[in-house]
Image 1: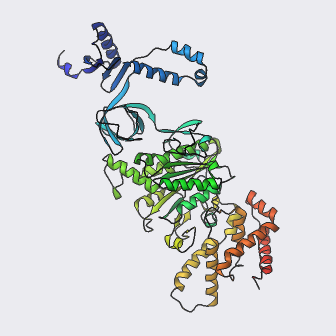
Image 2 (image 1 turned 180 degrees about the vertical axis):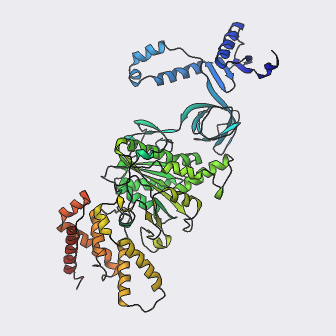
Length: 582
């Protein structure tokens, strides 16, 4: 050869015995036809190889017994299900099968640790592709550099060492989906962790999927009732909406999400609860509570606990969304809770720093906004031509000392369609749910409310805002006139009626009764300590004497002035019987 000798490809043959001249010529001819380049063959002796392995750059041709069996397995897997179910057909196909000279792209682990493997030699991989290490552990590519790639591992990194081989799968991460995942607790890879055996899934969905386009969506118009009066009356959530639940630690964020799940019983809504970075004991208690309320029948829990790797915590919300998309594409409605995305961002930050990416604000990588936007944009109300299904997302974000201007909270606020802000001061004062009326908002608004609740809620938000403002000013006044005192009592009564125990969601007609009675001022003169007791007595009385009307409200959500008049008439009658009014 001349000066081009140094530029020719090197092919390495590993086998027990050296290939004959005839064999070497055949191999060289095959390689030159394959790569259209001059090939230089080198033989390495390896006593452990039964057959031979041919390595050319990143490609490995495994012509060992094991390699041929692997090809056979892949061939059988590719057969139609009907063929697999009929043994004679499989036997006939196997007779006609012959192994081919098929390259398997492989790389080498350069370094590994902290759940991250850095690999060289894989020049054709793509972002998000799944790799298989020679030790059987899987990983996903999250960083591609010129000379090497960064891979997060879905398993213990201890068996993997520098020099280990890693192979391409040419597939992205996915999860088994279907009706059978309901009632189960699975990890971020879809593997059951509830001790109830395997899950037989109907389909396989990629965990990362492009969000529905603008033309595939329609406006949010159907209510997703939480059963919580404070939310359904003032900050209604619609099917297909993304409503952020935000607040400090221990302010009742998860309680709102769980109440919403419990309230979907009998409403043909599938629920997915994604637990990210939580204690395993907390998740176990949550599952137990949902089982007691009968909510696990239509709920799947996707769990990546605090003891799981950052990679599993990173994957969990995307896996949960893939499960929700299965139901949305079947024309059904799904509700997904991300609890919480603060921990998800922290897990992604850990991965990014280990991959040696440049840190930005608060040490988060530059693409942390895209991390959550591509997740939350997958929630939508599809139009009828695409099946009419929906995914409603309730992401949860934890703040520090009520600071909603921090990096992750502001990012997610800008992505979502509103937020429910929970205030520590209200929570510890006994106001639960501790919804701050001033900072909370739903950008969908009344479009996602039934006519009955929309009309009944009337001036509730304005009345509460006036009460909060008056309460601040009257702290400095010692002498108040009677009208101001009455306004304060009225506001205090409204706040008292917005208190609601956990796992006790209100039905639509119950919300209508409370709103009509409270906003009419009938309970203003009743002592604050007795308002809840009187209100529940009134509800029972009205439901008993206007059962058909209440059923009509639940089924249709329709409203008329006659509804209001009948509720007020019955309420006044009952208050007279109780001697509560004079």
